[in-house]
Image (cartoon, rainbow, N blue to C red):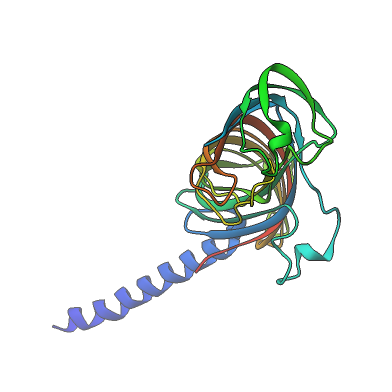
Length: 287
């Protein structure tokens, strides 16, 4: 019995030494050395470039395709609206929430709020027909079009943009690699450099602003199609929890059900490639 009482203090002492040793190892190991279990949030701005696109417009009295339509984005520039809660949806923005399910891999959900504007001073070939009732706005454009050049400076025929915007709601799986050790950085908890690559997919939820043959425009959000994307980026993390990230992102968008007017008979469809440049700030933390 006496030996048992002597063993108990010895066991407690060993347990305490072991706990202190583990704590010391944990303190010595850098917070930024492991990502598993961390959450992060990112907010930033973007610029886009778009490939040419054949856009088809269909309705009761018309069916035509604009061949090789050119389009551009609508940048806000450096502006306070990026951080103004009232106007944050006006510029082109990116919002992303993510979770590291391992040290090197994360899953995210986010919104790429892009803007797509048909170049108005272009001349493009049109194929199809317009046959509106006489006296109706837009009837001046009645006719058969067979690869006919049309100058769209005349806005009574068509203006077309996704400026409220070209909303790509998507999820991504990304890989992250710390390259700080390659550069012999002394303390990654103060400054860390990471490379990231990822793939994603999601739906397009635009609010399309179209003036089409004098018809009343549709003015509401609508699920119009899908997109897939891939990206690569550079992440600079400061003091464990704050970062700046630059990304190059490209993808394919297919919108087969775009609402153009208040009539359910009217719609448009298109598909195109895009290239996006993103600069964002964010935070990374454990709960």
